[in-house]
Length: 382
Image 1 (cartoon, rainbow, N blue to C red):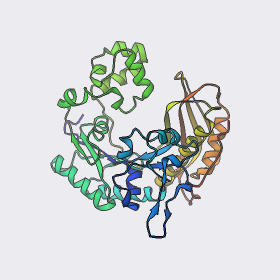
Image 2 (cartoon, helix red, strand yellow):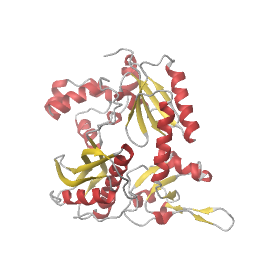
Image 3 (cartoon, helix red, strand yellow):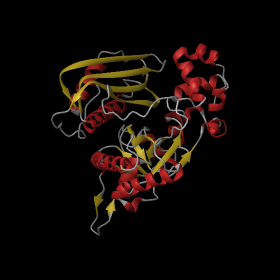
Image 4 (cartoon, rainbow, N blue to C red):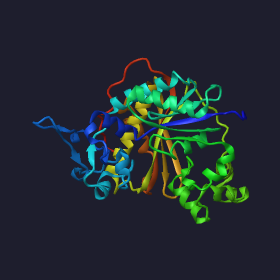
């Protein structure tokens, strides 16, 4: 592996919420939550001011798309139910999502970065990996220049982690948010990464964290000190080897710049296990949101999909997948939602669910425009 590798992970700060604050600067410094439906649009007052909805006004089973750092300080995070969040922060401002604005800012920040460092791997609407290895500029000044280019192009801040690999850079971009720069070498893994909770590793979710904790493994350092044989015996060969490698900071994945993905997927691990009957409305909204985001990703990348699939992981960690092949490729949110719903009818829904995902594969170049993806409401076919 190239010892001079410099891989950056750039993550926009509270992206959706920050875009909304550009539109409503009077809300800066306040707890703001983005989510729910369009009925919560701000209302113009006679004096030119705006009246905003509050979280306490929300009735329904929707979930938070994102929140400002002020809202997060009150315990309100993305993926939480809005009704539950209202108990924690009833006075927080509630805004509906504006995906057109988010896509526009996403295009602009990525174009700005490309003028400085063109080797970019697109990881979604608000984050990218950048290979800086062949650029001659000193690392810190290069990071500052990239951040300034993003600010100039969008008016928004971002946080950057720069390390020898993608795994560590992903962790580091989150260490000094918002508007941070974190630079780390392999010789600093023990001092700066090992004290962190194991859940800071991308891929170790709440349930894995709970399982590790049962074995007395709470930090990345404790995971690194755990014998490989033990991890394999408890988690299986593939996962055990992976846990050992990531705890040691090892990751040789390249920054993939080509734009020919085999599939596009979105998934959500729930804050609590959800039941198909008793949490039907909440599951329906999450499911529809995942389909919309897959459709948005397809359009943004210029693809249509002929095969739509779903993934469920139950509370006992057992996972099932189903897919359906369409006669014609699509990037239409309504069609993806319908196809994914048909897949959902073919899986058992008697157990509680901890993860739900939607996947689009069989990709072909998108040759014609799709309909608007963001006014779709559908019922979960349970």
